[in-house]
Structures are given as structure tokens and as C-alpha cells.
Image (cartoon, rainbow over all chains, first blue to last red; front, side, top):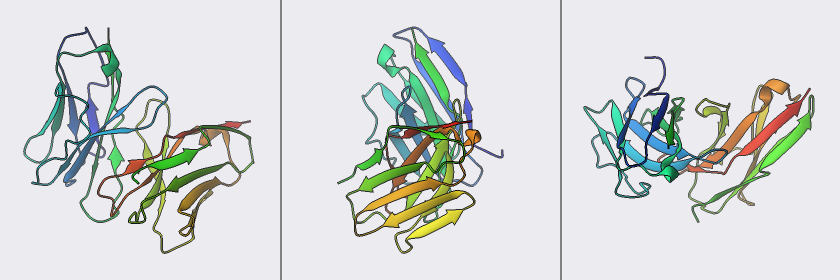
Amino acid sequence: GAGVSQSPSNKVTEKGKDVELRCDPISGHTALYWYRQSLGQGLEFLIYFQGNSAPDKSGLPSDRFSAERTGGSVSTLTIQRTQQEDSAVYLCASRREVSNQPQHFGDGTRLSIL
Amino acid sequence: QQQVKQSPQSLIVQKGGIPIINCAYENTAFDYFPWYQQFPGKGPALLIAIRPDVSEKKEGRFTISFNKSAKQFSLHIMDSQPGDSATYFCAASKSNYQLIWGAGTKLIIKP
């Protein structure tokens, strides 16, 4: 597609449930990032996939959070046993792995935990 | 060492004024400094970026000024318009491997 696509755009779920958020990057972009953005706040880095290398998971806040990237394209961020503090917008970005190429963002998934 | 400090947190400017948003960094290895613009309900979008070998870069009404010795860079918006109202983020990285983000500035341009 023309841009980074994220689904669903909104997700409301009960505390304790598991959720899966999907990111479809721009074709040909081998680098993929997940961020979390709480209301009115900046971007919190979660995880970075770079080509075939092991992902940089240093930003994942707890072991309830995990992410996969299948076939070097689509990525799924999974949050297990959701807590109310997980409520935020989850943003995905992709870029070409050439020096100084910008990150292109999707419009995010707004996650609300009741 | 890894922080990027952005100020102000919020800014209100009259139409036609020149809002200025400032960022400061510590890591001298950073070599890529982008600014992103984010509208409500949307993801951030690259506005303009600069490398430390130049002191200023202009794209339309947007200008980045870069002071390598002070480790500071700033965004100026000339002839600001209500449509420029958005949240602006500065960032820094080494070769764009992983961006270190500022906390954001919510800009409101009053008609």
C-alpha cells in the first residue's frame, strides 16, 4: 500500500484480556518500529525490527508485551493480561534501511482497557 | 546522554507570528536531527531534517537552525497559519538507527 497500515484503529477490551495489534509496513521497508503514546505525551519506543537481525526489544515495558514480524513484512504486537495502564495509542513506523531515511508512521491503534 | 530536551511544552502564537521550538541534546555522536508534525488522531509525519554539517535548512515556511557547539537545534515556522496547529516533536539519532524523541510541543496558532 501507499502508507503504513495499522489495525484495528480502535480497540476496547476488558482488563485481563489479551490483545493483538497489527502493522502492515510500506512495501520494501525492512526496518519496523513500535511505539506507545499516552494521551498528550511523547513517543515511547517499544521494539525495533531490522531486516533479518534479532529485534531490539529494549523498550518493552514488561513480559506481557511481545511482538513478531513474519516474513519480514507484517508485524503483530501482543499484550497479554491487559492492565488499565496499557491504555494508549500504539504507533507503528517503517523505513528503508538506508542512512537517514525517515520513519513513516501509521495512524495508530487507540487501545482502551476498561 | 541519550535524552533530547524539548521546550516549550506548549505554545500559542497569533497568525503570522513566528513560533520557535527548541531542542537540546547531549550525545555528540548524533548525526541526524528530524522534526515531526502530528495532527490529532494521526501518526507523526516527517516535516524537515538536518545533519550537523549545516547550520540552517529551509523547506517552505519551516526552518531548522542548528548550533553544533551548543548542541541545540530549533524549528522556526514563518508566517504561521491556523493549519500549522499541531504537536511538533524533535528527535535525534546516530545514522537514524533509532530516534531519541523530545517530549513534544503543542502549538496553537490563533486566527
